[in-house]
Image (tube, rainbow, N blue to C red):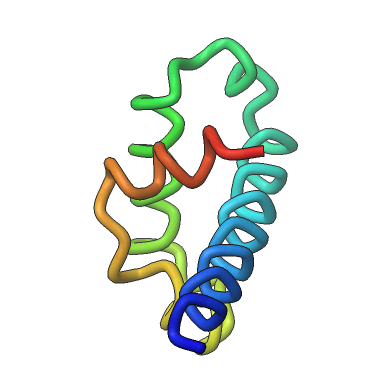
Length: 76
């Protein structure tokens, strides 16, 4: 049961990260050419500084470290 909850949380986190990535890509078309490390940094900055996420979305992704963001972005 806990494993299913973890999987569901990961799926939701990925959805929020993809939403942020979409927003950042629309604002900065050159994002496509950045490395995963640079993209993770941009996403983390967006999470921490913009206030554009709902409280639920913030609760899902704010605790993520850069490495965790990189890993979630790389999973398809």
